[in-house]
Amino acid sequence: MNKKILISRVAALVCGAVIASAACAGDVVVVMGASAAPLSKDQVASVYLGKNADLKPVDLPESNATRQDFYKKATDRDAAQVKAVWARLTFTGGGQPPKEMADAAAVKKAVNADPKTVGYIDKADVDASVKVVLALN
Image (cartoon, rainbow, N blue to C red; front, side):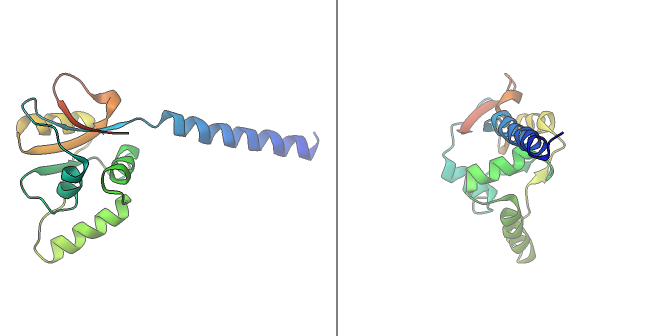
């Protein structure tokens, strides 16, 4: 097979995979228990950056793509930058980082167990057990 044709086919496959993964990335929503009031992006950022102790944030695992997407959209920082913020806060006694949940089901369970707990999940995982307090598109 001609090298140019082979390279073109490989490039097309790679580009197609990149486009497909971007198209498959879901919207992230911030969720709380059923009686919660809507939150602004600034309020959510404040909670997840340790500036607001009124609410208890929960996280998805570091390897979860929704976590990366959430931090970029909610705080305008990547997950590593947020982790550094929490390391500094923990070291100085300014707070503890969000508790890590195993998956979206665990986040939904946590926000239902405590009205002060806030979490985030992929929009596709939303059901009647939680209230969306902010959509991050």
